[in-house]
Length: 99
Image 1: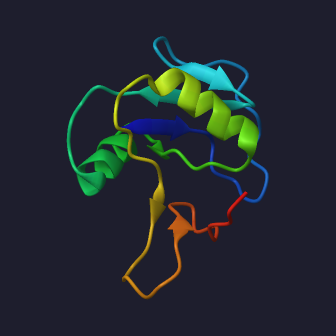
Image 2: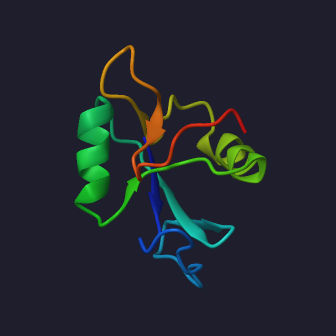
């Protein structure tokens, strides 16, 4: 799963100037590419235990970054919906758009 860590203060969180060892920085956010296996809920809970969340994708540059660094691993991202007939949204509550 893919972890994104940024200080939550919507709508524009301050850019991270540095990231912890083992994390990657891109566009002011810190990302950790975990090799742990689990379902979406396990992965989001694991992220939460590190004061982070599964990654959201705000623009094509972020998508490109994640695709380059995730390798061949299947990766969870922070996209969810409450029920099949409900709209998709990011874990931070932002509605999904098709970029």
